[in-house]
Image 1: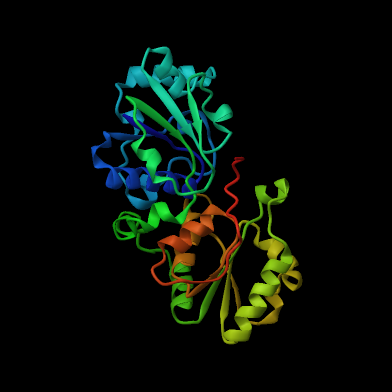
Image 2: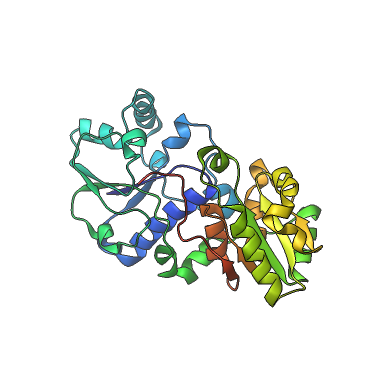
Length: 299
């Protein structure tokens, strides 16, 4: 049995799903893979579990493997501080952990053997790690997991049709122009000091407009008011063709990702949300990309 931790917002969930699908396709004889969805039974963050609602993915969730009473016992133990991996160990299962990030100590405390590997790198050999039960704690934000089977994964990760008039209007504007999506992540990134400098955006926009002066800039952000107040510093005043994409919050948050994925070009933030939009696009041009994606998880 192979188990991958599942947590966070939509982008994290998708990257963790991509890792599992890579493993299943790369090493099919490796045994059954499960996504440990226990995080969503004890935490209320973002929009909860979203793979099924957004992409209609029927994932192999660990919660569906056990009888309801057994799973509830696991969840009761988790609320007391015992991770699923630790509960397995306490029951006598021979289980080991492969951890990409150090926050397993918080999310999945485990007193068994833990193998550490570098964060956000491509190490396919770990999917063949020997053992009866292997628990994977990681976020796997590296394009190689996706690109190895991109045709299969793009089919599985197909956005639902856009049905509301507001987003249909945005999609029409994007399709009919030299559209450049700009993702500006604020929120918790601003609080933690992870935001990109304003000059990153102003220089990137200047370069795009030099090459494509008729571009329309579509601004995606979790703080559009801040973007408007700082338009001069961000370079958004360099053209009058600026559209602030509004209204996609809570259950509709994924629509920003969907709209970014159909833009002609992207000026990316250092967020996994934006990175995933670029991967799911078939023909987007990346005009600016930070050197490292900040997934918000310490290595």
